[in-house]
Image (cartoon, rainbow, N blue to C red):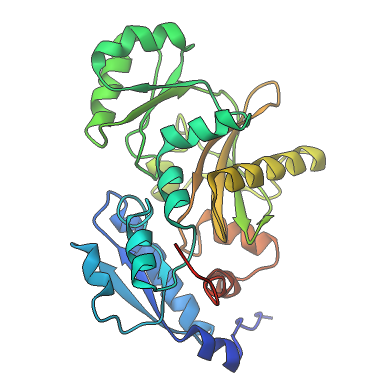
Length: 318
C-alpha cells in the first residue's frame, strides 16, 4: 500500500507564503542544480506549499528586485549559490532563505579554509597544503606523503579532483585544478571506505556507505554511473556509526552551519575517520544522498523539504 504524501496544514502553508526555489545558476554544477530544484519544487507542491521555480542566471542582485515571493529555498550548488554570495544578497534584502548563513556557506564552500577550521578545532582531517603554483610541487611532496588528492578548493560535485603519486602527476593535476580555481588544495589520500552523513536540524541521519568501481567517488560515480552502491545500514558497527555521526555534527557546528547539510568522511585501514568537507546545499533529487538518508530515518522527501523550509520561519538572517 502506497504511503500518503506528507502535506502541510493550513496554518503552515499560510505562514510559508509564496516560495521561490532558486535553481540552475552559472556554476559548473548547473545541470545538477536544475535536477535538484525540479525535485524540490515538485515535492513542495505535493505537500501543499505555494512553490515555484526560478532559474537563477546572470546578476544575482536581480533576484531581489521586486520579488514576488516571501522566502527562498536554495537548490543552487557551487559558486554564486552555495558560497555565501546569494545568502548575503538575500539577507541584505530581508528575504528568508534555507540553509546556512553567509559565513558558514563561504567557509564550507572553501575546502582549504574549512580544513584550517577542522585542524584548529582538533577534528581529524587529512594532512594538507595549499598550492598556488606548479613550482611548489617539490615542497608539497616533501611535506605530504603520497598518494595525494588534488582538487580545486571552491568547486563541488568532485569536479577537478585527481589522485597523484608522482611529481609530474602533481603538476598536471595542479594545472587541471587551477583551471577551475586559483586556489588548489592538496591533501593526503586516505585509502579506505567513504561515508557521508546528512545533518537535519542538529541531528545526524543514518550514515551512508559509498562504493564504486571508480578510483574514488567522482562526478561520474555520483551522477552518471549505474553501478555505484549506497549502503544503508552503512556497514559499521553501532558504536562506529555513532562515532561517525558525532564527528559529522561536530564538523557541521564548527563551520557554523545550520538547518541541514551533508558531511563527507573517509575511514582508513585502521578504522580512523577523516573529515573531507561539509556541503551546505547538497543534491536534492529523490535519488540524492540527503533524501536517501532521510528515507532511512522514516522521513519522506516531501517532509524533508518542508522541514528545511520551516527553518526559515520567524528568524532574522544575516
